[in-house]
Image (cartoon, rainbow, N blue to C red; front, side, top):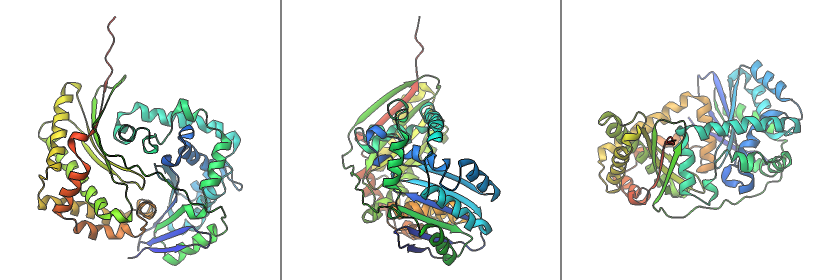
Length: 415
């Protein structure tokens, strides 16, 4: 099993992973433009632009596009992250060519229609409100805002409703579209029931004519060190306290592969330990989590859990103790092997899912400059050592220099 990669003459990178016997084909079109690439005054533009890609092209209105997708029985979606915007489509393999034409037309020939622009502002504002209202987004949204305050990495992916989303203009979005959606800034990945030759031929047919000014954009690398920071948030309408602790990590690229692999294993170890200590042994929380978020310009690691407000201090103590144990090297070789193997198995199972594997290939091509990393991960994980885990735990999770956020219910005022 191999991933076939080809760069089209116009600069678009194409990757195809044939998966024998699979009935579906997953398509992922990634654009190297996310929230870290935005100016503060247009924060949220990448996400707004993602929404507008679905609103019409020179060939189709949004309604025609939706009807064409539905007629194929396909599932399409998109997401915006800090360093990419990704458009996805999953379809029956016999309809792959027609589906690819629709998604490529959507991404490369959008008109950002003026009448749809104002209408779409409302759903985006409401999507941002969902994030603001939901403590589940604490680790993903608030932690980077604390760790990278004043840095593009700390800006919210969706933007700020009052400061930016209500002020962004259609012309500003169209200018960004023309500047950032160009061939060499895009990666296409196709995975599932299709041959490498057919996948590449499909990309050539529908994307070779796409032209654009191939420019290079340089992202600012966030290299600040960890330092103790605290944030306390009182929020009306919630009944649970959420505790999160985070750390800056090294930006990731092909040169930092050892650290990238080790941090994935460290995250798995802490996830398992927190579940045992916080939930199973003490009954303090339902959903303890550990998460490693690697990027080219910045990375961070965080843990979090929710609890009854009366147990907030106890939960914080247990979470901190687990971080201290990792930092001090209280880890066993067998634990490392077991967790690394668990992650490797999940990567192998990812090959059962066409759309998830296509997205992973696109992301690793942009993040690690290696579209074949998905297939290499099991072996790389098998080579991780106890020394690696101890070294990178000590480097990246200094317990005393944590960024800590507590979101708790807002106290009712006495009258």
